[in-house]
Length: 102
Image 1 (cartoon, rainbow, N blue to C red):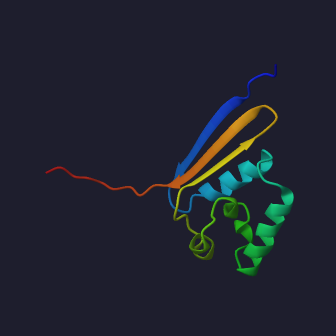
Image 2: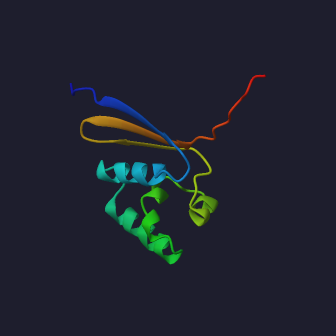
């Protein structure tokens, strides 16, 4: 019987324009969660829209509005397996609200 794979859950949260999507997309690519051909496709499509550097962000930015505006609108989840691990990456944005009690 084979060895059970390690489960790794990663949540990426950060300020607007801090590189959450790009960092997470690149991590997914480097860990083998998405193939080179798909990244090259994203790079071509992003370049056609004048956003060539967004190729890794597009791994998670699926909505048309996200790609056009270059912002995260919805949370994203990506699951994949490596030879040793089951990975689950979540990327989300945070809107900070300050509450003052008088």
